[in-house]
Image (cartoon, rainbow, N blue to C red):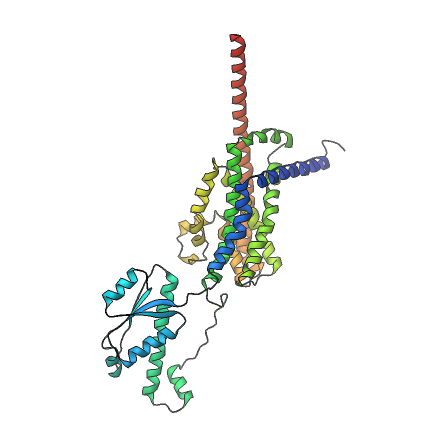
Length: 418
């Protein structure tokens, strides 16, 4: 076989990429820090996060009642609130000062204040009020306390209206209370839970962050140990950067094929999150997303000088990335500047595509925009990764030549002194 033939160069390129792949796999499994981010964190962190939010909704939120009415109607309101699944009446305070003290000590999460004229105003056919004071530090508790008071007030209002209407049949009472009937059917999130709404996005961000952290940690270790000097003969032997990037990509992709299946398929089924995607569509989306994360991680690794730097950089942006993805905050309400910043991260489009496929039951044709952008990111970050390695190799060659020149001069000086 001719050494300058196309087939020979292809075989040589495959052999070189496989050699880099073997070397990178050996370095990954030797580095405990990289193993933690590549295997341990993706394995355990989603389980912990999903288990914490496995109850989906908040129940039995502690509430204190200040009942200045002391009437039959106010006691009925309190009993009906306590009977709901959302809240639990744990204290009855004598005044608002005592109730505020309980809330300030985090003993209760909300205050129900019933005024002294509560039943009097209802008996006079006047509108009355119940004041609800909620602790806004926990949005789920606020929602539960406020929703329970609202539903009970509506139910009591409907019952009072039936008593005053004088209708004789149950059907007439139903029409009187609810002239326009409706049925509430929650779509894409049947339980209405926080976990089913947010955790699918968190799983995709975990995939990106752990991959970038592992690659950055390996790059920081290589730079600390001056291992990039080994890339200089590799580039000379392999005639370019492409085979080096391809070999490293094969290593990371091999590991994250398993991790990706764990995060996108197994964990949602363990905790009964919505799983509506067909495996062909999910596979088609996960391939460009994983590749984009790999090349993005390689690009980020160029600015990592020490092992700890990548953790400070990527952990800091984890929460902002969740908001910028549009999963926990509406995409339409994100300012244009920050939307532009979010386009730099593969997680933005990976999260949107995954939620529409797995939680909403869409197909790959429904996420064509995100799918195409992910492939654009794959191409853009691949080119940038090649440029990054080229720059690192040039820097390594420059420092190696400087070191060689220094040693030669030192050797000459010793000869003169001898």
